[in-house]
Amino acid sequence: MPNLPSPNYPSTEQELYSIADTTYDSLEVPENLAAFEAKKPGKYTPIYIASLRTHKTTAFNLPDNVMRKSIHETLRVELTANMQTCCGYFQDLKGYIFDGFPDELCEIKYNEAGMVDYDSASHKNWEKVVALNQKMEVFISTYPTQLTEGFMPSDFEDAVSAASSAFMLKYNAFKSSKETGVGTGAKIKANNLVYADLQNLQNDAHNVFRNDGEVLKQFVFLEVKKIVSPPGSASLGLDLIQDGTNLPIPNAVIIIQSKTGIAMQTTSDIGGHANFTKIDPDDYKVKIQITGKPDINLIKEVNTGVSARLKVIVT
Image (cartoon, rainbow, N blue to C red; front, side, top):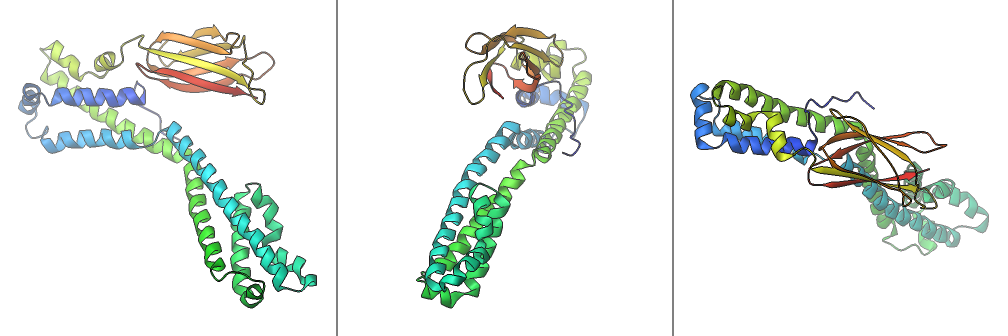
């Protein structure tokens, strides 16, 4: 994975977007905007303010890790369906080979048509599906007379070609969706730009409202954060389940710690549940300690007003 940029913003992603919206709303209050323009004429134009909101919207619309994982897993399911279609066509092709070629050649022609790749392809070896499709297409174009004599429908070649193209299109999307580092880096860069915009605005606000502390608070990142994400307004729950049996895992030690807070610890109950209530919204490092097993380390974003949960399947 490539080296990823580091987040500059002292907040969760959702907090960053809420802080940006709230701050820009304050900026567009007529008397506030007039004060900024008076201090820096020509900077705080409608075009400039629109660019601030565009940076935030662009960052918001980029998929986060959860969304990218969902996209990847969805494509995996769809890819399986495409694979089954292609493998089904191979079974059809075998039937046409059986009727169109002498018995002593059938086994040779099965292999030429892709039999050597079929088993792996049918067990979700995606590269073998690609190989199987290529061999089927070449075989059909090479032996049109024999296959027609084997009762192959006239539209079968087009159907195989279409299935092959559909699989390849989905497979390329699947591979791209797996490159989480690229997506994560783009998301962090866009978020950092939003934070840089807010810091620039905050710096100007310190000059504009140096004698009006109450208005100034509307443009100070950490002050606005207190409004959109009050301390103690979040919670995090965990469900620990044994892989295979789906039985709950009691008596596991769970330790969580935010970037700026102290570590908190609890133990999973008989149902494998653990809960942390009235915690501050933040990104949390989560460590799960189970007797006889290596520690499990995770990171979870916890936002205000959201009962965040982690389902952890332990192998």
